[in-house]
Amino acid sequence: MAIDNFIPTIWSARLLQNLQNALVYGQPGVINRDYEGEIREAGSTVKINAIGAVTVGNYTKNADITPPETLNDEQLQLVIDQAKFFNFQIDDVDRAQQQPKIMAEAMREAAYALANTADQYIAGLYTQVHTGNQIGTTAAPKTDLGTPGKAYEYLVQLGVLLDENNVPTTGRWVIVPPWFHGLLLQDQKFVATGGSNAEATLRNGMVGEAAGFTVLKSNNVPNTAGGKWRIIAGHPMAWSYAEQIRSVEAYRPERRFADAVKGLHLYGAKVIRPKALAVLTADRPS
Image (cartoon, rainbow, N blue to C red; front, side, top):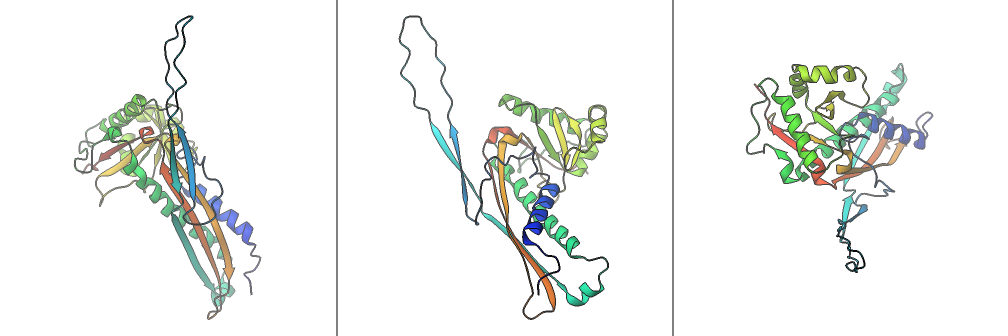
């Protein structure tokens, strides 16, 4: 017996949309999906080609130019190495009593759980940032954020690091934990520039603009036991994400009077331009 009105392709599309809506680190405008392609199974690899810099020389009239240079090419691999699943059931007794039906809500909850897991995975890629683009370290995090104006000042410093690496100014973002956002709200520089923009939530988690960044807020900002928070700033060109809802299936467990649904989410992400990210490692002020 199949679940009432269950159409696998429709449920699968709905699940994927929920994932996109719930992501902060994984949403368009923060991370690109340029290499998503066709993902068929865990372990699939997306190959990313890169071409080295082209040398510019001085031209002298009536003189031969240098022979054509051979460009260095580099191939990066984005491996789809994450495979997560959900598998839940609704007992026939509960289904008979439910008012309204709870299957759609259960599917939304499954989508959120998968999205939250993927978000944390992407946030963990801060370890691939260029070593010169770090303010503070795990061994020596910044501890002075309680000083008025210091939070905003560190955003400016993150922007300078990106400037020095020729990262485009349009499209920059920074993802902060709620407590960091609270510090910015106490700074008139943020309130003056970001307040009106904060009224319109253009992206998931967007709370305003500051120091050339779109500021987004997330509870998935990496930290170590409530300390050493890794506040990531960057541009979508810095990293890439690829995902697919591989399958969503409805079935009747053999030894249960219940409807069940299981689904498989495949994804992977990679930092492809480490200099287009910058990380602030800081402790939360007491």
